[in-house]
Structures are given as structure tokens and as C-alpha cells.
Image (cartoon, rainbow, N blue to C red):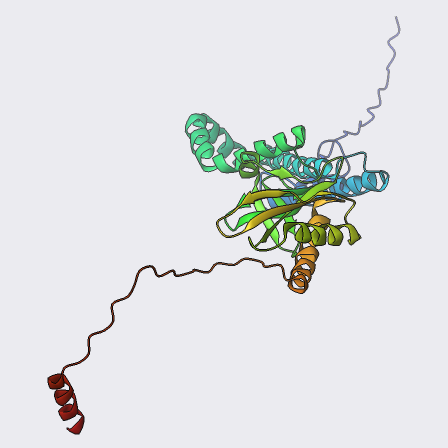
Length: 325
């Protein structure tokens, strides 16, 4: 067998080496993700700024959504106070979730959170005592929103350190309720306080209120004449819807007490009617000679007073000598 020489040609094979591109993506994306690497300080700061911008954007979007809902509800079928409270609560929960997510992504904060959770019993007790009032106001605010003892725009009458105050409900936040008085003052009361005290809601389905105006005249004055004047002035007032009467309600130590009872459109109007009628009654009572009693005392002397004794001559001479000196 003839041997055949077979020539073999060696063909070089190129070796393909893979260059790392960072998670299989393009180099630009790898560089961008490196800037937000939470393992480094500046990466954690950049990630925190990103979370902050994201939270502000969500807050703005939530406010715009609430404004859009209010604009599409001109008849106020949705309670404004409730939707405002829900907005505050949703914003608060959103920031808590973002903070927890950020602490989970940053390794150093994650280790700190894990170590704190190891002593969760002690931390919970400390936080519970420190935030007892705040959490109580939050829970009270939720109960006020659920049970709705008042709504935004209602006129409330309650007791404050300055005395009995009347104000219109302006806002219900997570911790406090704000009321506006007739002289444009703001009464800020914690939700826990306002939910635990007795308050009078002067706004209801039927806004009419009965005005009870006390009037006092002297015992020597004519009761029928005084009642006639009071009823005439009340019936002539534009803001009085119906006059019920003006009975005698008591006999005081120095006065006869009457009470004008009339229906007014609302509590604010009733108060202004009281002021008008008091001024008009004073002028008419003065013209009619009807006495409005005031505090005074009558001193009555009973029995005969002893006449002073005549001074003796010795006393007169001593007085004369003193005068000469």
C-alpha cells in the first residue's frame, strides 16, 4: 500500500474574550448604576436625593388628585374634612414607606435597623412613651373622621382656657383641629382634647335657632307696656323669622325678669339680632319711662336718734384757748 503523505494545515482559532459590562448591560448604564451604589457614601447620598425627589413628586401628585376630586364635586357630596385628613395620612404613610425602603437598600442603615430590631422590646417601650400623645391624637383624628361629629364649616361651641368660644371648623390634621372665631382668631385644639370634651354643634340640617333674650325691668314699671315695646321691636326686625312670645320668667331681688323668644335663621344672625334689640330697647324704655334696674342700696333708719349734748362752758373756754394759740 502506497503511503500517502497528507499535509495538514493548522488554522489559528481566535479566542473570544468577554469584557465585563456590568450586569450584561452597556457600559454607560453600568457607570450610571455605580453612582447610585448604596455601598458607598456618595452613592447612598445620591440614592437618598432620588428618593426625596420621588417622594416630593408623589406628594404633588396626591395633592393634584385631591384638588381634581374637589373640583369635580361642586355639590360637596364628599366631605372636605375627610378627604383632607386622608391626604395627610396618605402622605405620612408614603414617607414612612420610603424611609423604610431606603434604610433597607443602604447596607449600613440596614445593619443598624437589624441591630435595633434585636432590642425591639426596649425600643418599642421608649417610643411608646415618647409618642404617646402624638399617637393618641392620630387615633382620635381617625375616630373623628369615621364618626363625623362635625364637618368642615360647622360652627362649634366649646370650652377653652379663655372661656366659652365659638368657631368654624377650618381643618382637621393628623394631630390638631383648627377653628376660626368671628374675630378671625384661630383656635388650635389637639384631636385627643376635642374628642374627649363636650361640644355644641350649632350647625345642623335645620340651621334655625331660637333666640332667648333676657330682659329686666323695675318693679314699679308697667309689665304690659314693656312687653308691647319688646314684641314690636322684635317683629319689626328683618332677621327675625317668627316671634314666639315674651313671658315673665322670674321675680328677682330688684327686678322683674322677662325673656324674648324668637326664631332666627342661624346662630350668628341670632347674636347680631340680640345686639340690635338691646340697643333699641334701651332707647324705647327711656322714652316710655320704664326703669331698667341696676345695683343700688336703700338705707332705712328706724327709731329716734339721740340729740347730741350741749358742750359745757369749760369745754368752750379750752377750745377758745386752743384757737388763740
